[in-house]
Length: 215
Image (cartoon, rainbow, N blue to C red; front, side):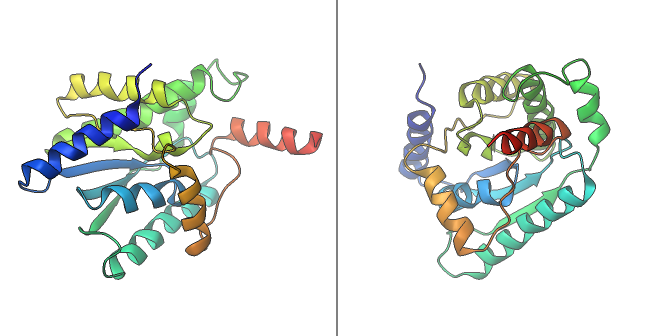
């Protein structure tokens, strides 16, 4: 089984050794809490543009709350001298939940973590790869692998396939490793970030509410 954290570390070691122009990373982010550690970690190696693209978030009020938290965190990081080596920028994608419902059709009752989620990963990462190619970025990646509930192997598999399709290198990751997830919780508390208790879509929300009702 591939250790994606070690694959990432190999790339970072190469970047440090080369001591060349700082590479540009187009980083898909699912939310501020998940991005907190990833930005702290990678902003010493890359000039990062965070791409907030999450059409799976089914409710606009929830979407707006999450995207504003993302922007607030990045503004706070950029304002803190020494928080990261390089400044971080952010781009908000289109809010188009109809695209999510289109790829989820027929999979409405699929359990969380199954095929519906894999299609959702592909939807979000495909748009990320497309824009990374347009912007001539050196790498693209996602913060999604920090979650213990997300299939890091599948995310990396999709990312690598899209890298070959769009011609932009994929930055492998398993950000939950090396206490990454734990650090994201600490940073969320430090910056008083809104931490949602479901992934974002109506189906994951219903599944989470059912779980809470059964407790």
